[in-house]
Image: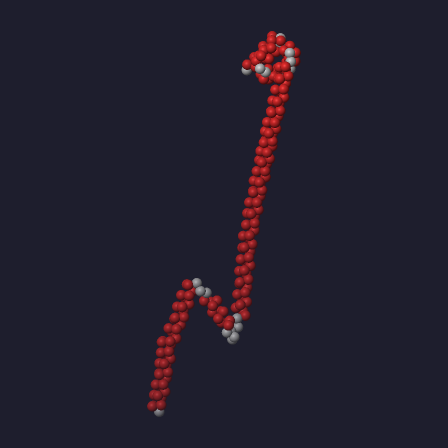
Length: 199
């Protein structure tokens, strides 16, 4: 019996040795390689957990309803949070655009007012030019009329006019007509008009 017991012990040692060799040579290095690969892939940016879950969900015997339910809740919450952030950003952008639009409209109104002022100035300048041309033509006609009258009659009319008007007419006359008219006026009136003409 000793030989039977010895054989069984030897078989046990051989099977333990084979098992030990399997662990030492195959299983432990394989587990180490898998862990090392997972760490390297994690640092390279791959999400190992999601990959394992998606691979496991393809297997028919793995129940993943609870896991996917939790993921859906997380992804839905994350999606809602992202939508809220985008909504806030869009609201801020809209407010900025409204402010810019208001400032641009104010600038447009200011420019339109300036344009109206400039146009009215141009029109008034044109009106002044037209008025000036008309009044100078009228003045020349009046001066010509006074020069064609007799000197005594023109002197009587000039004495009745306001001094400023009389000075203006006398300034526009030629020297001979002016001298004739002034000689027919009273000395004091003629002196006042001459002093204003010389100024």
